[in-house]
Image (cartoon, rainbow, N blue to C red):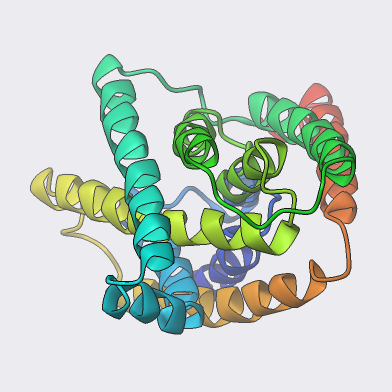
Length: 265
């Protein structure tokens, strides 16, 4: 049964990590019925999703690395690094201050609803701008800040926050905004996962893990995330994010109702 639960959680993580619907929110709700998982488990399944996106973008990453002499590549890479450093510095500051919201249904539900409304507004505003694929320094800075905000407020969605901040800040092209958000997310999420895993190992939290269940969840998360992201990248070429916004709003109100009647905490 534990292996089945690991597969279910791996599927949820794989689908929701890079779709703008909040992986944290979905996992918090899933754990209400499947049982809470360790920090190590959550880190491992997230690492599977990150690996999937790394595989999808390996050519782009290699091009940025090997094409450093090209001014356009160098400018794009510097902006990726800048966004990552902003996230890293602000993220460590937030950790040091100990600021985080409780991971229960009500704040997650409100984050889903507010995020859905925000997405609809961002799509509306971006449609009225001249089409642009250019990543400015303003976009890079705001994407770095958005990643920290998403980390503090469960249910916000890191991918959703960064994509729509980029669109509102001037990168009106959905594909370009999504690519930058995902590429920034790769080093950010690897660093966050490594930091959390080292802390967990140091505190002795990994000693009693079921590594078979972890391995199964990791593989499932990787495969499902690969399929989900490939689908998303094809979908947004000719479709808006509106369907995800509507889903978030409906799910948020459903969770509020379930919390009110005591079905979830």
